[in-house]
Image: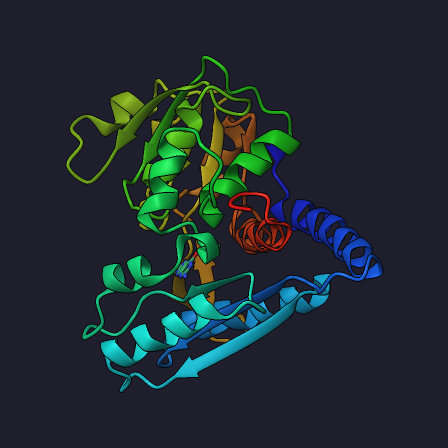
Length: 293
Ligand code: GUN
């Protein structure tokens, strides 16, 4: 069994990005600039946003954090998005989800100019992804593909079972795994909460991507000997062992599944650290005008 070390790979990619930024600045160009909007005080969101801002600084990006109270109206938030869309000094921006109930996430996502949508959530980017056109690919699926690539894990002709059909992970990762590309070119089955005989299906999988958000859902009796396991779960559970009072739990029962696998991602330290570098990569692509000019 080989552990897929997302922390190590993410550090390597950050170093690569920092080198590129240094070269850009040496040529007299402005450093890439990412803005992050956060609404309210969700603990998980505040942690993620702080990490995104810190990572920007580590690679030499400029970053702007716009924090609003959850009393902001939908119209006011949409007006803020318009300002960012029109700001030529900004390469890309994201609105951290979830949003308070009185604001439509879909309206917010569609209000972002798709050319600045470095989260890859806008329907234009999602549509382009599904037909294999250049686009901003959302962070988690892109991070998973990068891990498969850097570990040279064969995917062509393999049976990949995705558990979960979210717009952020399940659907886009299924799209990428079936695309005619390496990594990709797999036979993909998407399972979800209404799937019958889930275990029969996962037992056929060469690669399982568990992205359902249910701690320790995938057990050893659901996994074929030698399978590759990608654990996307990041459920926060109370813990007395950490400073924050929380720890992250994956969707895979790691201790019993790991001995059966060829490769497995741990939680934390697997897919998680890759998501932020995917966002940084999209921002760099935006600054270089590589997707939409
Ligand atoms: N909430 C959880 N993951 C994400 C993400 O990748 N982007 C945004 N904007 N919000 C999130």
